[in-house]
Amino acid sequence: MTKQYGVVLIGCGYIGEEHLADIYYRENVRMVAAVDTDIRRAEHLARKYGVPAYGTDYRKYIGLPETDIVIIATYVDSHLGLMRDAVAAGCHVLCEKPVAADLAAGEAFFREAAAASTAVMIGHILRCNRSYQKIQELVRGGAIGGLKLIRIIQNHHALEWGRYKRLMQDCPPILDCGVHYMDIMRWISGEEIVSVSGRGCRLDPDAPCINYGDVQVQLTGGCLGNYESGWSRNLKACSRREFIGERGYIRLTLKEDRVSDREEGDLLEIYHSDTGSYETLNVKSRYKDMYAQFMQLIERIEGRPGNGFTLEDAWLAFMAAREACEVIQTAESVSR
Ligand SMILES: NC(=O)c1ccc[n+]([C@@H]2O[C@H](COP(=O)([O-])OP(=O)(O)OC[C@H]3O[C@@H](n4cnc5c(N)ncnc54)[C@H](O)[C@@H]3O)[C@@H](O)[C@H]2O)c1
Image 1 (cartoon, protein in one colour):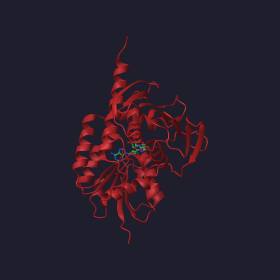
Image 2 (cartoon, rainbow, N blue to C red):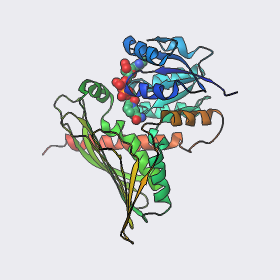
Image 3 (cartoon, protein in one colour):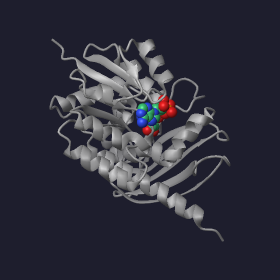
């Protein structure tokens, strides 16, 4: 018989619903409760997905004998405290990235997660996306020769400005989204990030932080990474993923017209400069495959290696994205 895991979701906003919508009906999932400091959001998701209980106090649910897993999908400033309490209650944890906004909290998070007697996993959803898995396979397999340049742009036309402003109270997009792309650069290239530089600015006068940045990273094998990211009402949504090698490029796009700021895609275009040929691959990938990610946690709980993504990988991505924020802030504060 399939083992069922009791799950408490904390945080019923955008990404909390993405988690719930993809796991609530699965054979190995038994939802226990949906929790949010805003009771209306907890109630809304509980009713929509048939979660038996909802509330504002997660402590009521994490200690229940039927709770095995806690999904943390709240604001960044609460991740460390929630992970700590969930682990202390004997629960496994799937926590949204980034784990923290500052170095001290980030260090504490990773130290305590590594020492936990339960499994703690950080939600790097792109590791579970088949398009990126295919790109990694192609690049590492030499399809475009030695990798020289990675170009990533992830700009959001932030019309839900209140939500974005709240997220930016904790950390800027260069950290919030940046952890994904620092990880992508390491993972796809198989190289380590050795230096980080960049510039940024505040595009909206009422943005709580620098809300646009352009970052360059140097990787150990000589590959250069460029990552541009902004959340602003004044930016057009823009999404670009290019991996450029000595013998061609791979570009990831979404088959349908790109009017949104979705960071995933399902169409790979490959250009081979030695033969002058173009190739396109349709990858059967899914937008935010939360169940695949959830199953990575189950693999760990049940003692299997899963996709090999480790806490160390998440830590290195966090550190590089933190450094990117620092260089951007330092550069902005210098006036002439
Ligand atoms: N992996 C991804 O692709 C991805 C995408 C978007 C957001 N995120 C991350 O998910 C987190 C949440 O982002 P979002 O876009 O869902 O934000 P959101 O504003 O849509 O939702 C956050 C929810 O958490 C609730 N909340 C905040 N603190 C809480 C606490 N201490 N206890 C209970 N509820 C609490 C809020 O009331 C809100 O309903 C952020 O860390 C963000 O970086 C990840």
